[in-house]
Length: 99
Image (tube, rainbow, N blue to C red; front, side):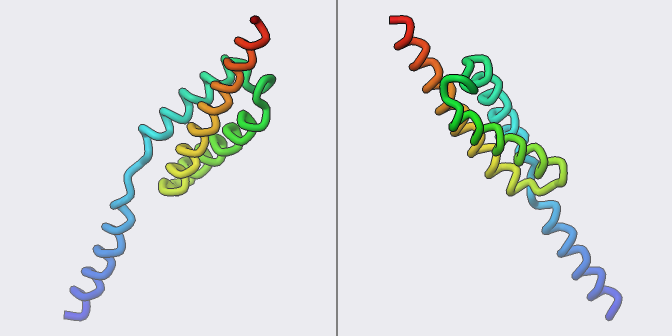
């Protein structure tokens, strides 16, 4: 009886660890947004937002590799947000300079 109790507790703990899903979609979006910001020359025209996006993207990748999927998802979402903002600001500045 005691052995079954331990097996049940171990099974419950293991199944809780498996409940977290990998944030593949968020990581993919973050990468696409970051590359789009880089191609828009955001590191020149919107350096603050681009740097934040880069830091969050690197943190997301690092946490994903270490299997901290919840943190990786949070950082990926932040990276996407700042990448999109940096890309928008870069395109806006380029457009205004050309007029």
